[in-house]
View 1 (cartoon, rainbow, N blue to C red):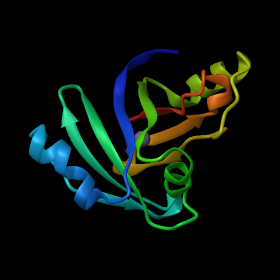
View 2 (tube, helix red, strand yellow):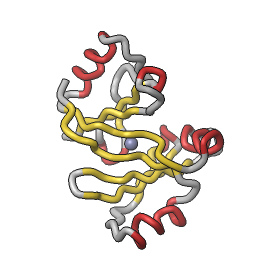
View 3 (tube, helix red, strand yellow):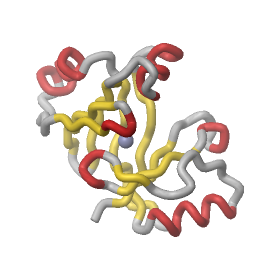
Length: 134
Ligand code: ZN
Protein backbone atom coordinates (compact mmCIF):
# COMPACT_ATOMS: atom_id res chain seq x y z
CA UNK A 1 0.00 0.00 0.00
CA UNK A 2 1.08 3.55 -0.56
CA UNK A 3 0.43 6.20 2.11
CA UNK A 4 0.62 9.58 0.40
CA UNK A 5 0.38 12.01 3.31
CA UNK A 6 -1.47 12.95 6.45
CA UNK A 7 -4.77 14.03 4.95
CA UNK A 8 -6.21 15.57 8.08
CA UNK A 9 -6.37 15.53 11.86
CA UNK A 10 -9.86 14.95 13.24
CA UNK A 11 -10.55 17.03 16.36
CA UNK A 12 -13.67 16.47 18.46
CA UNK A 13 -15.33 19.67 19.66
CA UNK A 14 -18.54 20.30 21.54
CA UNK A 15 -19.40 23.08 19.10
CA UNK A 16 -17.85 24.06 15.78
CA UNK A 17 -19.14 27.61 16.27
CA UNK A 18 -17.19 28.18 19.46
CA UNK A 19 -14.48 25.59 18.71
CA UNK A 20 -13.40 27.24 15.47
CA UNK A 21 -12.31 30.40 17.29
CA UNK A 22 -8.78 29.15 17.97
CA UNK A 23 -8.27 27.64 14.53
CA UNK A 24 -9.80 30.40 12.43
CA UNK A 25 -9.29 33.56 14.48
CA UNK A 26 -6.14 32.83 16.47
CA UNK A 27 -4.20 30.70 13.98
CA UNK A 28 -5.79 32.44 10.98
CA UNK A 29 -6.66 29.23 9.11
CA UNK A 30 -9.29 29.53 6.37
CA UNK A 31 -12.66 28.13 7.37
CA UNK A 32 -14.00 26.31 4.34
CA UNK A 33 -17.53 25.79 5.62
CA UNK A 34 -19.14 22.84 7.32
CA UNK A 35 -20.87 19.69 6.14
CA UNK A 36 -23.13 17.24 7.96
CA UNK A 37 -22.62 13.52 7.40
CA UNK A 38 -25.98 12.23 8.69
CA UNK A 39 -24.97 8.56 8.71
CA UNK A 40 -22.06 9.37 11.05
CA UNK A 41 -24.14 11.76 13.19
CA UNK A 42 -21.48 14.40 12.75
CA UNK A 43 -20.96 17.86 11.32
CA UNK A 44 -17.44 18.49 10.05
CA UNK A 45 -15.59 21.71 9.31
CA UNK A 46 -12.35 21.76 7.34
CA UNK A 47 -9.42 24.16 7.70
CA UNK A 48 -6.69 23.61 5.09
CA UNK A 49 -3.10 23.79 6.38
CA UNK A 50 -0.60 23.41 3.56
CA UNK A 51 -0.97 19.90 2.17
CA UNK A 52 -3.18 18.75 5.03
CA UNK A 53 -6.24 19.91 6.90
CA UNK A 54 -7.65 20.24 10.38
CA UNK A 55 -11.12 18.71 10.62
CA UNK A 56 -13.34 19.77 13.50
CA UNK A 57 -16.05 17.27 14.40
CA UNK A 58 -19.26 18.16 16.20
CA UNK A 59 -21.82 15.49 17.05
CA UNK A 60 -25.36 15.93 15.77
CA UNK A 61 -26.79 13.47 18.33
CA UNK A 62 -25.98 12.47 21.93
CA UNK A 63 -25.39 8.84 20.84
CA UNK A 64 -23.06 9.70 17.95
CA UNK A 65 -19.41 8.50 17.96
CA UNK A 66 -18.04 12.01 18.50
CA UNK A 67 -20.40 12.70 21.44
CA UNK A 68 -19.34 9.40 23.00
CA UNK A 69 -15.68 10.24 22.46
CA UNK A 70 -16.04 13.62 24.22
CA UNK A 71 -17.97 11.99 27.05
CA UNK A 72 -15.10 9.56 27.65
CA UNK A 73 -12.01 11.62 26.85
CA UNK A 74 -13.09 15.24 26.47
CA UNK A 75 -12.45 17.45 23.46
CA UNK A 76 -9.27 16.83 21.49
CA UNK A 77 -7.63 14.87 18.69
CA UNK A 78 -9.99 12.02 17.84
CA UNK A 79 -8.38 10.52 14.76
CA UNK A 80 -5.53 10.81 12.26
CA UNK A 81 -6.39 10.35 8.59
CA UNK A 82 -3.88 9.11 6.03
CA UNK A 83 -4.46 9.58 2.33
CA UNK A 84 -3.84 6.36 0.41
CA UNK A 85 -3.67 5.70 -3.30
CA UNK A 86 -6.12 2.78 -3.33
CA UNK A 87 -8.24 2.30 -0.23
CA UNK A 88 -9.66 -1.11 -1.15
CA UNK A 89 -6.17 -2.50 -1.72
CA UNK A 90 -4.92 -0.89 1.51
CA UNK A 91 -7.74 -2.46 3.55
CA UNK A 92 -7.11 -5.88 2.02
CA UNK A 93 -3.40 -5.63 2.79
CA UNK A 94 -3.94 -4.47 6.37
CA UNK A 95 -6.49 -7.21 6.99
CA UNK A 96 -4.00 -9.77 5.75
CA UNK A 97 -1.43 -8.31 8.18
CA UNK A 98 -3.85 -8.93 11.03
CA UNK A 99 -4.98 -5.34 11.59
CA UNK A 100 -8.49 -5.07 13.01
CA UNK A 101 -10.71 -3.03 10.71
CA UNK A 102 -13.74 -1.04 11.86
CA UNK A 103 -14.81 -0.70 8.22
CA UNK A 104 -14.21 -3.76 6.07
CA UNK A 105 -15.30 -1.77 3.04
CA UNK A 106 -14.99 1.98 2.49
CA UNK A 107 -17.88 4.35 3.06
CA UNK A 108 -18.40 7.87 1.81
CA UNK A 109 -17.29 10.63 4.18
CA UNK A 110 -17.24 14.42 4.05
CA UNK A 111 -16.31 15.89 0.68
CA UNK A 112 -17.22 12.62 -1.08
CA UNK A 113 -13.99 10.92 -0.01
CA UNK A 114 -13.85 7.15 0.39
CA UNK A 115 -12.97 6.50 4.03
CA UNK A 116 -12.46 3.59 6.42
CA UNK A 117 -11.38 3.37 10.05
CA UNK A 118 -8.88 0.97 11.64
CA UNK A 119 -9.43 -0.26 15.18
CA UNK A 120 -7.32 1.52 17.85
CA UNK A 121 -6.54 -1.88 19.41
CA UNK A 122 -4.34 -2.56 16.37
CA UNK A 123 -2.72 0.89 16.17
CA UNK A 124 -1.27 1.70 19.61
CA UNK A 125 -4.50 3.36 20.67
CA UNK A 126 -4.82 5.77 17.75
CA UNK A 127 -8.04 5.84 15.75
CA UNK A 128 -6.67 5.79 12.19
CA UNK A 129 -8.72 6.75 9.18
CA UNK A 130 -7.70 5.91 5.64
CA UNK A 131 -9.06 8.08 2.88
CA UNK A 132 -8.91 8.18 -0.86
CA UNK A 133 -9.96 11.24 -2.82
CA UNK A 134 -10.66 11.22 -6.50
ZN1 ZN B 1 -11.66 12.35 9.33
